Length: 79
Image (tube, rainbow, N blue to C red):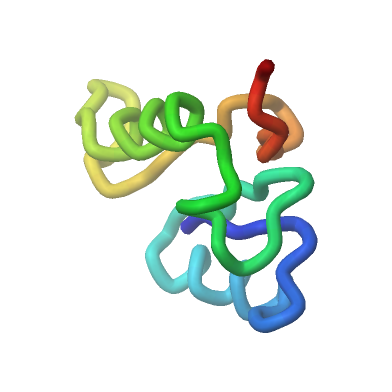
């Protein structure tokens, strides 16, 4: 479950509830609102999605690990 830290349409509580329903952790992008696919760095977003789809021996295929200990990434695009 991926959310934007600045999302004003979907509350953090709702994002967390969705993550719990799917037995995973929410991942939040800094400086993103509701349109994470358009606001986030495409390479970083793709990496997170690929990691969630790639099964690993220590976790089920449907769970995703946040890219940082805080589970936060940035929507700031380099350049």
